[in-house]
Image (tube, rainbow, N blue to C red; front, side, top):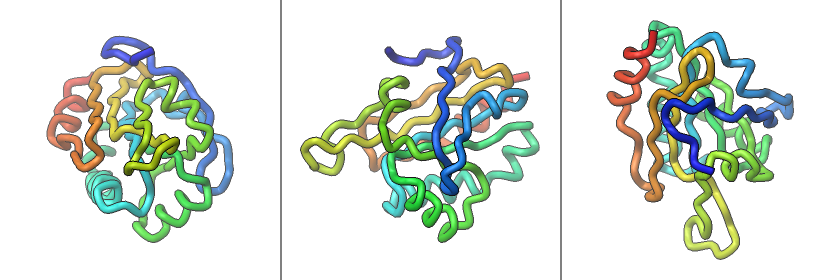
Length: 157
C-alpha cells in the first residue's frame, strides 16, 4: 500500500548502527525528514546523506529531525555514519519489512536478480507523523530536490 500525502506514516521499529531498536514514533513532536536510500558507501547515497548532514543546522532551525533508513546491516550503517560523520540516526531495514510497508522496494537493485533495496525516497512528516511531502524515485542516481524538502518543512506549523 502506497503512503500518500495526508496519511499517517506507518510506525516501524528498526535497529540502528549500535543494534539498538528505534521507532519512528520516538521522533514525533518535531517535524521529521524520513529519507530512505538504497545502500551505504555508494556514490549518490553518500552525497545525499552528506547533504542532509551539512543542512542539519537549517533542519534544527525548522524544528525538524532527519532519520534515514536503508537495507544494509547495522554494522555497515554504523561504519557509513562514522566515515561520513553523520549525526542523525540511520536505521537498518535488513528484513525489508519497512520498505515493503512504504511500497518503495527497488527489486533487482544494481542489476542483481533477487536483491531488493529501498527506492531513494523522502517523506516529510509533521510533528504528529502525518505525511506532508513525498518524493520517490525509481532511478537510484537521482537525488531529491533539497530546496523542496526545506520548503515543505517551512510550510508546516
